[in-house]
Image (cartoon, rainbow, N blue to C red):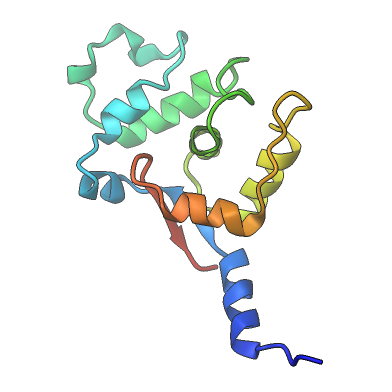
Length: 143
């Protein structure tokens, strides 16, 4: 019989208590423009669609606008998108509030999985996907 390693359990528990959000600072470190990334996710009803992209200057305002106007559009999130894109858009819908890994995992696997595209990803695998991101600016924090 093997004795469980208390340190391993503690690390696993800490991982489950992680919260994720999109970090504008992380995007900057990756030499990515938060404005460009967010502007590409605006829907047709977004008020800023009348502006040129170079006129946009506040990523937080864009994020709020996406949550208010674009998130309700039928095709804002679809199950045929890559996992990271779905999670990115789920965070935008939540106004980029830090969201528990377990909550992201549940919504991803229960709401966005379909018989045609099952999303069979473990909690640990989703954590690795988000932690290894170098495009969307995902950042995690403890509880």
